[in-house]
Length: 166
Image (cartoon, rainbow, N blue to C red; front, side, top):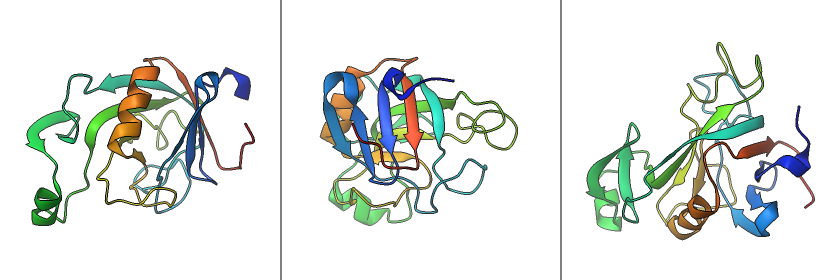
């Protein structure tokens, strides 16, 4: 389908890292607590070739809270988080992914876009480098804002379950 050299973003699920090879950028992330997989309603992070379908939140302030891809008008703080411990925080920016492999990460029962899999912000208190999400790729605010500026809609994203040497 594509070669790894074509990827604008590489997410290494084994090492919990995200890289932008063309820009020599490297970030630590957090992916699905339930592991790796494409089936809907599993909370797993999908593998394979994707593209950035939509960039959301370009003008949002740092730590803006999103629900259903809309800003709620709230700004996350430690105190606000403590008062709402049940919430799964989606903060600052959203890069909504769409699978490109029919029957694997695109289509009935496995569609990354319809599963609402994003690269998105999470509170600074959340650890990076270990799986903790509901299937999305989480990043802290500053690295996510930087990533958001480097990428564009349509960019190719490869999620690998195997360690990738850059």
